[in-house]
Length: 271
Ligand code: COA
Ligand code: NAP
Image 1 (cartoon, rainbow, N blue to C red):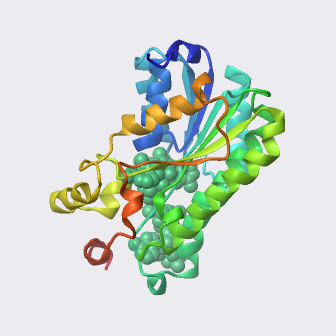
Image 2 (cartoon, rainbow, N blue to C red):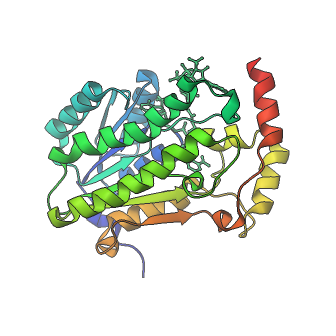
């Protein structure tokens, strides 16, 4: 039995951080299923390119340049999206930033920058989207990371921020459940051909070592995450809320990763 993707025809899917990588892959999957797509990210050029690519798939699509750290910009983008495509059926919140650095090598602003994008940004997106979410029926999907529950050296900022994101998921699931709004986190594993993985495992050798560490012995694909997003948003997911779901080939069972070699390479590039 296949998931019936015709149910997404004409649905409004809003993706924060949707101009590249995993989030763009999620947008593409919904676009192929006939949904209307709204996306935001900081770079106007990236947004324009992504919107054009979604339209090439036959979807109605629009987007704005907005930084999730700036509530006014997020609000304006959400208002424009709702004015064009109506209430939001699926909200995907995945804007994020990452770099490898020891806690002692992070300035207060370095730590704050990632917490502001990942955690405060997720709060801004969800909080400001709320009046535009279809009630009942909307599905909110936050894109987390295993650093949320696996304490990982060189990732103090991401660990703190994504742990907060998953707690936000659970609190919003409780507060918004009675309104018929479901809220869940997806925790991607190492996903091939993404900026996030390129920063944590630079080069072919590091990627191969990462793949060997995954119990299923392969890197993830963007589609692995897009399919989980579709499942959560579909009627098959209609009784799922407040969960944090790893889609990672089992990697999060294997404990903290050793990023020291990658961090040394990244630090050389910065000095
Ligand atoms: N090590 C230590 N500190 C670093 C750093 C590194 N590798 N990279 C950035 N910082 C610090 C900066 O020095 C600055 O701190 P300071 O003001 O005390 O000097 C602070 O972080 C903010 O940097 P800035 O470049 O001004 O932030 P930004 O808002 O323009 O960009 C980033 C945010 C740093 C997260 C940037 O990498 C980014 O835009 N990432 C998005 C793409 C991405 O990370 N994708 C993967 C998602 S998982
Ligand atoms: P990516 O392509 O860099 O995606 C991040 C997106 O967020 C980009 O579109 C970026 O576009 C946008 N963005 C960044 N800062 C923003 C801000 N302040 N305001 C608005 N948009 C912003 O990286 P990715 O690897 O696909 O990561 C996507 C998500 O998956 C992230 O939440 C990440 O934590 C999570 N994740 C990834 C992996 C992996 O293996 N890749 C593993 C676990 C979790 P702009 O530059 O235009 O702003």
